[in-house]
Length: 140
Image (cartoon, rainbow, N blue to C red):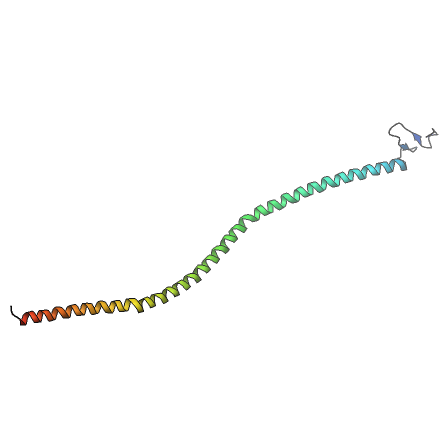
């Protein structure tokens, strides 16, 4: 651009920017400067987004690690409670079944066996008494 008086804009060798009389940036410079600012803002936004993503990930991992022990203890407590309830009901069913089977066993096997044992004992005592009487009567 041609050189003019100090009241008009003059060319300077610093990057082709036009400056006014008081060193103010002209429209061309302000467009270039705003595009640089936008570019830097984009880079700053990417950096901020990256840092924010890393911090969010770190926070989530830290909170998950802090929640892990209570979750494991709660799970163990719930499983133990469930196992106790299941064992109680299974044991109750097994006890009832065993009691029924025991009654049946007593009814069908033990009582007849006990009666047979008492009958055998009574018959042996009876036979021995009869033999002792027979021996006494028959004086050899």
